[in-house]
Length: 263
Image (cartoon, rainbow, N blue to C red; front, side, top):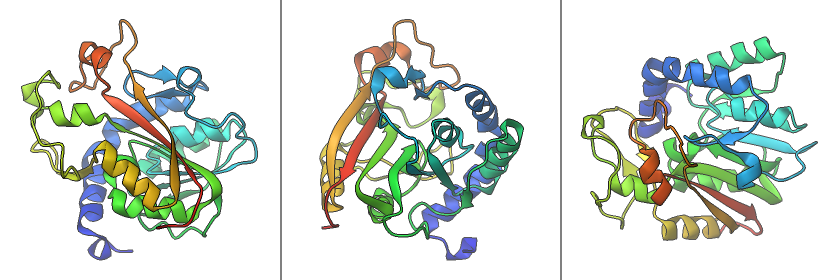
């Protein structure tokens, strides 16, 4: 699909990641490919503490929606999953393929839109997104698509910015990280465009997430609200204050299971 045929927000995010973000995220991707330990979010909390993934991944068909440099896919492939990654950015996938060659670990990578993947109905046991489609695609489009390509009983796990963080973070980076004041309305959360970046993000409130998941045949298994560990360092993520994130969740992971038909 040519850029002119893509939905406006998809085309905008494709250009943003290809032209600006891909080189910035390549070093993080390289570091993450180099470790076998699965860690989540800004603070790298270990999987063994959060329990995001099914215990047995061997032989499972997994799709990563918005895979970026595909380090999450690599982690899962090393545990025996049959992984497919899809991403909106060709430049991100270039990095992913380079790292596949370097680690001699190959799985399909698709340049495409997670809102309309083109993948077969009911072909996956797990769909996962870590700051990929989960915030850069419209949830009213990518959640139904995830439901379509998951088998009955299949699981969906996705990591997003914490709702409180979205409500408290200032408009621009030079204003500093999220603090103890609400800066925007909770009701009506959906599309977000920030002055410092040309991309389009999507964030929903808790009730809107639950209703959307249920409307697409999912039951909510868990909502994991990540607390920053003692002495945590947010590193290059200037808008996340570790001390704030000890008191409030800056990140959250939704876990759901497909139990019924859409609607």
